[in-house]
Length: 332
Ligand code: PBG
Image (tube, rainbow, N blue to C red):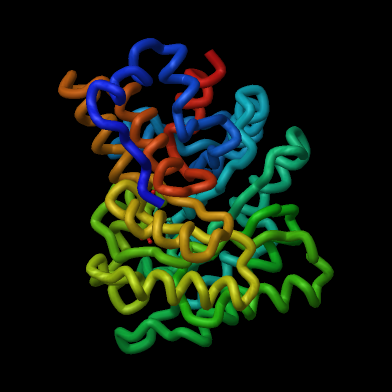
């Protein structure tokens, strides 16, 4: 439907912008703390908060500090935390067995959060890259990323995370058939209420650079991820991936990266009407922080504007490293 506009001066569209009160009344989209998922990096040790140099303001936390972060999230009204482990190089192997170790960093962090803040939803990342000697999300044999063998490993990883208490499983690997395999394994193991938020439309992007530093995967990675992550030129393919993941049992879907892919967010939401999330990734965070630190932009303003843009595009929520900073502002 096309909006009707009377001729000037019957219509002066500035009338609804004249004061904060009226602007508030007519605002179509708002950002709330309910929209935020906070990604955090976990490392071993105790009492550690170690800065990530490529992401100013972001730290890697030891498990005890992750529990404190969960309490902070709770106090700020942030509903969910997403865990990313920085795995010791010595634990990275060809078979990635650390990925489904019940006592690996991620699973210990899940339990630590659940012990202090059981109402915080804990989301995980399912992909082999933190545990893989060559930095890829799947098994590599003779330069090829193997699909089906990787899916078997991802299912074991999923079950270990669900066992540890994860509420939301986040497969970020982009293998085919993984959602269906995870869903049936979860059902068979009695984890009926564990949700899957699929990284369905994940692009092979330059915006992940700082993240790979944060989890210690940049050194290991050979080549690129273009045989499994999407080509940035494609849109229809994103819709096919989303539809496929929904049919296999995903509860929620994600588009990643964020700001450069708002057209995809919008198309996904308007096509499927399904819970839709975007990931404002590490490179997006780093760009805003870098410009703000140089005094070139107002960092807070751009942060809030970028997050609101996701809501306007149709997203129900956003994974963002800005979550605590944003919540503090939204809470006044
Ligand atoms: C890996 C994974 C990546 C991110 C989340 N999970 C990086 C990649 O695919 O190389 C990126 C997150 C970010 O950049 O903030 N499975």
